[in-house]
Image (tube, rainbow, N blue to C red; front, side, top):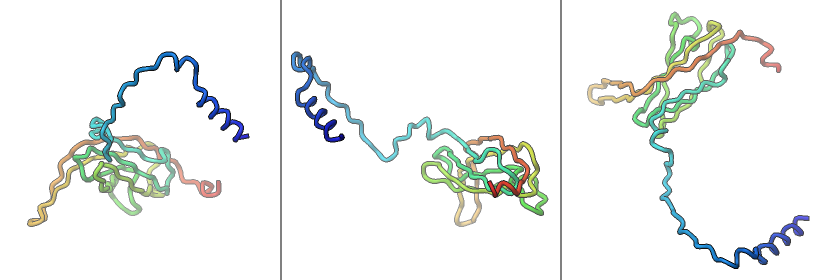
Length: 162
Protein backbone atom coordinates (compact mmCIF):
# COMPACT_ATOMS: atom_id res chain seq x y z
CA UNK A 1 0.00 0.00 0.00
CA UNK A 2 2.82 2.39 0.85
CA UNK A 3 4.57 1.73 -2.44
CA UNK A 4 1.41 2.67 -4.38
CA UNK A 5 1.12 5.96 -2.52
CA UNK A 6 4.84 6.62 -3.01
CA UNK A 7 4.59 6.01 -6.76
CA UNK A 8 1.59 8.37 -6.96
CA UNK A 9 3.47 11.13 -5.16
CA UNK A 10 6.55 10.73 -7.36
CA UNK A 11 4.40 10.84 -10.51
CA UNK A 12 2.69 14.03 -9.35
CA UNK A 13 6.05 15.68 -8.60
CA UNK A 14 7.51 14.69 -12.00
CA UNK A 15 4.45 15.88 -13.91
CA UNK A 16 4.29 19.17 -12.01
CA UNK A 17 1.35 21.53 -12.00
CA UNK A 18 0.34 23.11 -15.34
CA UNK A 19 0.06 26.63 -13.94
CA UNK A 20 3.58 26.69 -12.53
CA UNK A 21 5.32 26.23 -15.89
CA UNK A 22 3.46 29.13 -17.55
CA UNK A 23 4.90 31.94 -15.40
CA UNK A 24 8.10 31.33 -13.48
CA UNK A 25 8.00 32.87 -9.99
CA UNK A 26 10.79 35.12 -8.81
CA UNK A 27 12.47 33.58 -5.81
CA UNK A 28 13.58 35.74 -2.89
CA UNK A 29 17.01 34.92 -1.48
CA UNK A 30 16.78 33.04 1.79
CA UNK A 31 17.83 35.01 4.83
CA UNK A 32 20.02 32.94 7.06
CA UNK A 33 20.46 34.15 10.62
CA UNK A 34 23.52 33.09 12.54
CA UNK A 35 22.82 30.20 14.86
CA UNK A 36 24.43 30.05 18.26
CA UNK A 37 24.06 27.69 21.18
CA UNK A 38 22.08 30.23 23.19
CA UNK A 39 18.97 31.36 21.31
CA UNK A 40 16.89 32.60 24.25
CA UNK A 41 15.67 36.20 23.84
CA UNK A 42 17.17 38.76 26.22
CA UNK A 43 13.80 39.55 27.79
CA UNK A 44 13.44 35.91 28.91
CA UNK A 45 16.94 35.87 30.40
CA UNK A 46 15.97 38.58 32.89
CA UNK A 47 12.74 36.87 34.00
CA UNK A 48 12.39 35.17 37.39
CA UNK A 49 10.19 32.11 37.79
CA UNK A 50 9.56 29.39 40.35
CA UNK A 51 7.61 26.14 39.94
CA UNK A 52 6.81 23.74 42.79
CA UNK A 53 5.43 20.32 41.84
CA UNK A 54 3.05 18.95 43.01
CA UNK A 55 1.18 22.16 43.78
CA UNK A 56 -0.92 20.49 46.52
CA UNK A 57 1.49 18.10 48.25
CA UNK A 58 0.71 16.02 51.31
CA UNK A 59 2.58 15.85 54.59
CA UNK A 60 5.69 13.64 54.39
CA UNK A 61 6.00 14.28 50.65
CA UNK A 62 8.88 15.43 48.47
CA UNK A 63 8.29 18.42 46.20
CA UNK A 64 10.36 19.22 43.14
CA UNK A 65 11.44 22.83 42.78
CA UNK A 66 12.32 24.30 39.39
CA UNK A 67 13.92 27.76 39.33
CA UNK A 68 14.87 30.27 36.67
CA UNK A 69 16.76 33.39 37.74
CA UNK A 70 18.33 36.21 35.74
CA UNK A 71 21.77 35.34 34.41
CA UNK A 72 23.33 37.89 36.77
CA UNK A 73 22.48 35.62 39.73
CA UNK A 74 24.58 32.59 40.65
CA UNK A 75 22.63 31.29 43.66
CA UNK A 76 18.99 30.91 44.68
CA UNK A 77 17.47 30.76 48.16
CA UNK A 78 14.08 29.08 48.52
CA UNK A 79 12.22 29.42 51.80
CA UNK A 80 8.87 28.41 53.22
CA UNK A 81 7.07 27.53 56.42
CA UNK A 82 6.15 24.19 54.80
CA UNK A 83 9.78 23.01 54.75
CA UNK A 84 10.22 22.85 58.53
CA UNK A 85 12.11 19.89 60.01
CA UNK A 86 10.98 17.56 62.79
CA UNK A 87 12.04 18.81 66.21
CA UNK A 88 13.13 22.21 64.92
CA UNK A 89 11.86 25.37 66.60
CA UNK A 90 12.28 27.38 63.42
CA UNK A 91 9.04 28.08 61.64
CA UNK A 92 10.67 29.21 58.37
CA UNK A 93 13.32 27.12 56.60
CA UNK A 94 15.49 28.23 53.71
CA UNK A 95 17.31 25.90 51.33
CA UNK A 96 20.05 26.93 48.93
CA UNK A 97 20.29 26.07 45.28
CA UNK A 98 23.17 26.57 42.88
CA UNK A 99 22.34 27.83 39.39
CA UNK A 100 23.72 26.98 35.99
CA UNK A 101 25.21 29.57 33.63
CA UNK A 102 21.76 30.07 32.11
CA UNK A 103 20.16 30.66 35.53
CA UNK A 104 18.40 27.30 35.81
CA UNK A 105 18.27 25.04 38.86
CA UNK A 106 16.24 22.22 40.38
CA UNK A 107 16.04 20.51 43.74
CA UNK A 108 13.86 18.18 45.76
CA UNK A 109 12.73 19.32 49.23
CA UNK A 110 10.94 17.28 51.87
CA UNK A 111 7.71 18.49 53.41
CA UNK A 112 7.78 17.08 56.90
CA UNK A 113 5.12 14.82 58.37
CA UNK A 114 4.76 17.49 61.06
CA UNK A 115 4.23 20.41 58.64
CA UNK A 116 1.18 22.52 59.37
CA UNK A 117 -1.79 21.92 57.11
CA UNK A 118 -3.16 24.64 54.86
CA UNK A 119 -1.78 27.46 52.78
CA UNK A 120 1.90 28.38 52.74
CA UNK A 121 4.03 30.65 50.57
CA UNK A 122 7.23 29.51 48.88
CA UNK A 123 9.60 32.42 48.37
CA UNK A 124 12.49 32.58 45.92
CA UNK A 125 15.40 35.01 46.20
CA UNK A 126 17.94 35.15 43.39
CA UNK A 127 21.26 36.46 44.68
CA UNK A 128 24.73 37.17 43.41
CA UNK A 129 27.06 35.63 45.99
CA UNK A 130 30.70 36.70 46.06
CA UNK A 131 33.42 35.48 48.42
CA UNK A 132 36.68 37.23 49.27
CA UNK A 133 39.04 34.27 49.38
CA UNK A 134 41.61 36.10 51.51
CA UNK A 135 39.30 37.04 54.35
CA UNK A 136 36.59 34.42 53.61
CA UNK A 137 33.91 37.07 53.91
CA UNK A 138 30.91 36.42 51.70
CA UNK A 139 28.54 39.04 50.36
CA UNK A 140 25.14 38.48 48.81
CA UNK A 141 23.40 41.00 46.59
CA UNK A 142 19.69 40.50 45.90
CA UNK A 143 18.91 40.37 42.18
CA UNK A 144 15.20 39.42 42.17
CA UNK A 145 12.49 37.65 44.14
CA UNK A 146 9.35 35.67 43.42
CA UNK A 147 6.59 33.97 45.49
CA UNK A 148 4.18 31.13 44.74
CA UNK A 149 1.38 29.63 46.87
CA UNK A 150 1.52 26.09 48.23
CA UNK A 151 -1.21 24.11 50.00
CA UNK A 152 -0.22 21.22 52.26
CA UNK A 153 -2.81 18.44 52.61
CA UNK A 154 -3.18 15.81 55.31
CA UNK A 155 -1.01 12.69 55.18
CA UNK A 156 -2.80 9.51 54.06
CA UNK A 157 -1.35 6.02 54.14
CA UNK A 158 -3.53 5.05 51.20
CA UNK A 159 -1.60 7.41 48.92
CA UNK A 160 1.07 4.69 48.64
CA UNK A 161 -1.47 2.06 47.52
CA UNK A 162 -3.22 3.88 44.65
